[in-house]
Length: 104
Image (cartoon, rainbow, N blue to C red; front, side, top):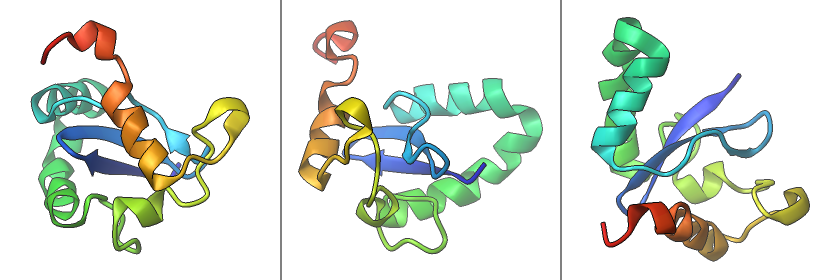
């Protein structure tokens, strides 16, 4: 399953081109690394730094996309699998789990 790491503002999450939607919640880098290790183990951690280098440079770990906006073009993240605009996608990241995060 083609899956990328995306960074919007200070939140990291995985995004899959199969459902054209996020496959994890947006989280801090520390939380993302812990979740990545839980899911992918030691081998997964070996590849993570290379992927994060691309993420820090352009917002996506995708080799072919120039930015996270390009990666999420044609997404199905909205209600009823509707496409979110880039601004709506940023708002989704900002508000996801806001009640649980509190004032973080």
